[in-house]
Image (tube, rainbow, N blue to C red; front, top):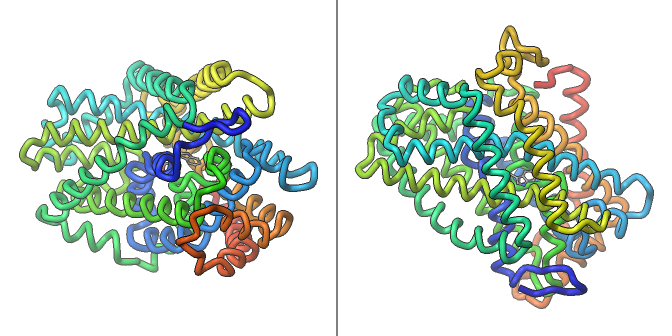
Length: 463
Ligand code: TRP
């Protein structure tokens, strides 16, 4: 671990890459991606998502890393330091707020993964022979008024422990063990899933675009998913970049993170959709999709209980390296800007997130008003968790990404961005696409995001 001017740094390039990949890879890939694909009608969503990852995600990722490393600050501090004008620190502030908003529903689903780990160990999951029994297990679990809250609290507590230990000791170490193990396990599961009867249908569903499904909501969902999955639009990568040393090659690290994250999401799709067709499960299962579909393939595997246990352990750790990055953004803000101690900031923020998470934890049957549908009290018939997921995870991130592009492309300027990206001793990997990145950040990304947002406002098709 290094420390420059009292600010901690990653132990090296690998440390950063693992931590950034750890932030990116999480429930977004394995829980959110498959159910967004299902809601978006399959292959078309995947296609648009992939285009957004390349054209918007990757450039915004590089821009955030460059802002962070150059300023060595949290998102608010980074804008204060680099972008002249009173307005810009508020963009950092929106990011910090979004971090709290995302953490307050993400930790609920993360708690579910811990609950499912328990069910895997106890063998209960292996009773899920078909989509129907599996659905019954899930519905009963999430409707409980107590367990989802307790597990969410436990998860936030774990996050707090890691963040209190600091950047390299806590965050890096957790990611180092997880990534390779998760990858290997997902490959094994994908092989099993694709070779199930009906498996090929899932494959086709995932990769064949059905243009009749095209709608604003699909486009918005794919944009939100591309940003969410790469942890963009709220300054998480600004914060992580701020712990990078000047020696490292940002360009190469950024590309690696984007490929790893997208690869894991596609792998998750290759597990869930074949399994879904095999189990005859309901593709519109919403946030429960993964929890309903997966147990049915463990049931079909030799050593299923062992695979289930390994899977939910790894998923919980993957979620932990993501919640850590969310909490870290808010903590870095209080430490850098308000002079709080790391301990105090981490405890305070995770406490707030827990309080805000409670209604999401109760939104699946425990409190009917929060559960969406006809008698729900919430707009658009959404449950409280999904509403938050859409507001913070799609809209807020998109607005954030738009403003980051304007700040970097038009105020800070493309030459400074490119110089910051190239800064580093390791020049073995040149930047063949540098001018393209400049054009994307300056013109394509802001225009694309703005167009989608304007269409949505004008037509009123929010969710
Ligand atoms: N990217 C993570 C996932 O896919 C979630 C996440 C962590 C995130 N940090 C973030 C999302 C910052 C948006 C912004 O699970």
